[in-house]
Image (tube, rainbow, N blue to C red; front, side, top):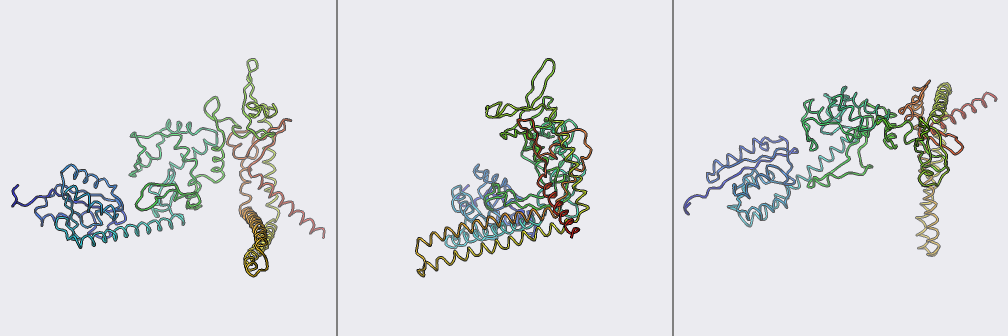
Length: 548
């Protein structure tokens, strides 16, 4: 090529459209940007189009974009030496990185850069004006990106707090409501699978065995089910055409409160619009809203499963289910867990529960109890307690205790008001101490001593006030739904045998003592005692009124 000929530039057009931009302006659309760039190339014959790279749906806050990286690779390979964009904002919105490319990287690589609407061409640049205007425009573009990020975060937070579902895909068991994409409705097929999973777990089946059952029966995994429903679901974990159920999948379903109608959202975030790495947020910052959609699993069943997951649920010798009392039997003397010990005798084998602290560390007495004996004792005691709860429920329905509950709450609130007055009084005394010191009424030593005393008394009063608030909250909860748990016992009226689901649902733990005494701590035992005391107070008040 001689000196008089025109230099030909191997040109690549670059187009970017982010999700935030959408199609608010036709000129910003992919087609609009391509047409603008190609029209410019037609009017400049020295620019020969070699390629057109498009990043559709990528933010301009960083350069982690596939088409952009392909274009830079082509530049480094010597295939391209000119880049044309609609404007600087399409190239990028981070003013530091954009400036790095325009002022250092592209000149070093011998690349000509053209931003059409910003009237910028590195081959014919005005040094004085460009050094002022280009950085300023880049700052404007970055400010727009930051402002957009703040607005989107705020809108998403508002939606989370009001209970709108904002996930990309509905969780297994649900589907998006056709009439409201931010609301979940039950998907019958997958919801039945979820119910089976919870039922099997309560029956003592391990997560791995549940996964095996689902695989053998050909139930599709959540990922495969979404794909078969026509959803464009992708995951980096997929390695086969059809995935298989695993224990991890089962545990994620069992631990997800969404099946009780509760949405927990906003569990992860990004540090800023520039940094896309996900970080976990503290639990107190999550957006948790109850009763957002119809529940697949009731609250009692979900809580029972969480209890089971926290227990030692080792499988039995059959490998099919955990033992009946696994993780629930403890030593009444030292509090250690009681472990199963099989003792052979002739052709028979006997199973005993023995204290692990004695067996392993020899720090407790060598007491034990046969498993069949324990089962008989627990069955009889549970039958009796179920009847007690049913009798209490029937008596409460016949006795007016609402007024007594309200009176108790009013009494607690009156005590809280007095306690808050006490806190305010100590605060006022603390505020006046400095004035007394400044006026010479008290000296430095008296000031420090009185400050410690008043601060300690205020802290004690605040602690007592917190306790009263907790009592009021508990009393109000008992006033609203204090008897709902009784239905869990009523459902098992007339039981003749024990199973794993029954035990974990109704029993908290079982204590074995050296004298072979068995103490059973039932679930909702505090509520049972509260309702029993309430009934007795109401009956005493009623009898006193009749006597008068």
